[in-house]
Length: 243
Image (tube, rainbow, N blue to C red):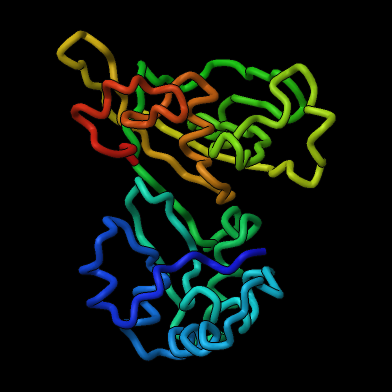
């Protein structure tokens, strides 16, 4: 697995004032701060290692390949980033972010707000296209449980089996279980009478583009997200994914 990308700046100020409009948060943290995992990340860079030798995401080595970052966000979304300052804390926080812990009492819960296209309502019955594609209701909230895989060529997530069976050319280890709960909060009408819904979302797993993909799968792509079916015209008023 390749090392996390970075620009190779010499200081946090140089990184922030560079020509690129986007930066990697783990690079900024390593350059700016002197806590244990930030220092460890700078030391790891100095080794010149080009391939990560472990990707368990919980050990001291992994903590020093990403400045202790315990979660991630898509670049066009907003939210809270958590960075562990110590190697021991990294493993403990990463365990708390694990999917199985999110369902336990007192477990880490991950919530988001998103603006979707369409009139989102809680389903009244279960829709099941395959054993890997289910959309229903749990405790008064919509429940999307669609197994997904990330396609590097398309640069987006795809359903593992939408009813026609999985692609036989794709290795089964690429299938990722994913679970999302959602609840509509408010509805809005656009200037052309188009309907939008603000939804409160909880993710149990944390897959690439999970919220964007799951809501698009049930017919409600996020505003500003043409990758998953929103009109490109959204970008005239919504400069990024509304999440």
